[in-house]
Length: 108
Image (cartoon, rainbow, N blue to C red; front, side, top):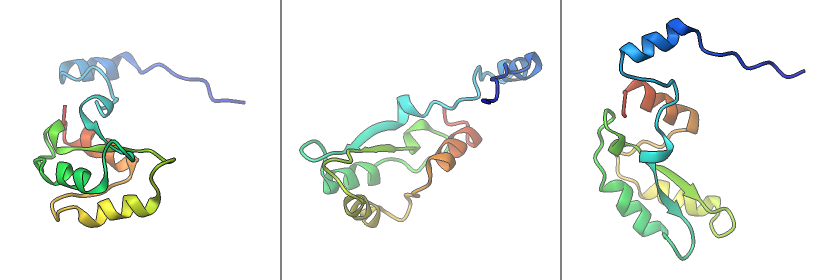
């Protein structure tokens, strides 16, 4: 049997409202998903240049990049090529860590 969804307690909502944050969900999709690895749209060298040119600022949404990989035109080998070409200041993390970093650093 599925676990029922529970509403956040009013004290939790009030705490977030006082801090200026109205949601526990970090703004990952809007400011961060700006790049794709997709044949014919963005190839590996262009994506590497785009990511490496961005600021390494964990407190800013500009410091985060979520890349959509088109699985029908790109493979894990293509993803590895991008990872291998990233500058030392770029950190590749899991989706869970990505969301946690944005939340922890208040990168709104």
